[in-house]
Length: 207
Image (cartoon, rainbow, N blue to C red; front, side, top):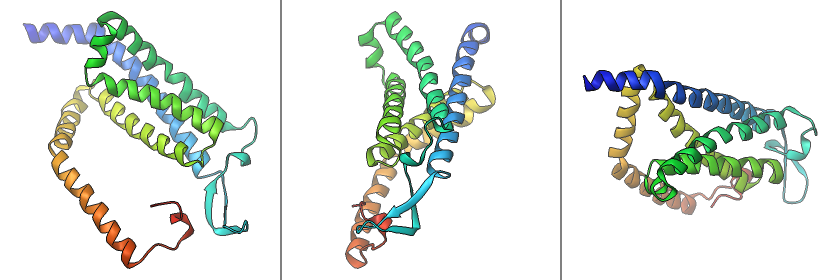
């Protein structure tokens, strides 16, 4: 009886609410894919050497190559606008349960970081340009948060719910191994840097 009541409330109220959030998230993801494809793949220029000459073998993205009214502004604008939907939902939830109680729930920090990092990434991409180190790192973090958020929305569909829950639980159980693996990667990279330091230009700013 209780299970049937929960299923009814989910189908009658919660599913439509989360489905709207999932659709808006999908639109944002498509815009993000199009933006990254346009900026980092189709809009590149040759890398400059230390003496100022161009190196035709290596290419990087340059914001100055973009036209004032080009597609990248529409993609970035779509990402920016779609972030207001989770911002509104989180604000409503924080208002109802109380801000202090809202921030003490660990899973809510995923939503807070997703929105905050998303807006900050849009700011960096627009004003600082896509080729800056900070812009790239924040964009990578934003993509990771979007991935986790995508898994969350996949759970609203019964066919995906079990597999998503299982994968997340496996990742949580592997946290000790992942830490061990990171230590190995760091130590072996130090050894390789001693044996054969990288000389390629693309590794110039990588420690």
